[in-house]
Image (cartoon, rainbow, N blue to C red):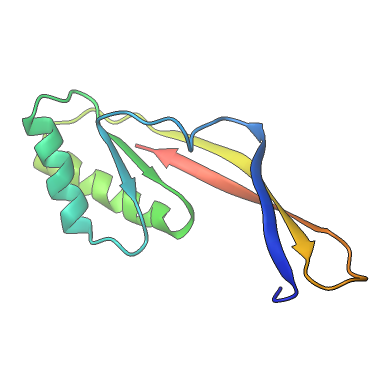
Length: 113
């Protein structure tokens, strides 16, 4: 793909879960440490939040499930699960003449517990 550059990235049909944010949301990445997410979520509860939303995509979903289970053990919580996905469309423009425009479609899945 070194002969192409990303021109446009947008979402296809589906939910806008990537833009839905709330003040009691924890976005979990694959690189982050679980203890940091757990302490952040517990601080949100201590500040008076009644609802905490854990958001993760891809390989970080496993970590989100683990963090939700740890939080349930530490605090008396009621758990609500939601799983959704959206199609992401990337459009790549060629840097050299004679090549076609390439469109890449991928599914982004979201789970909240």
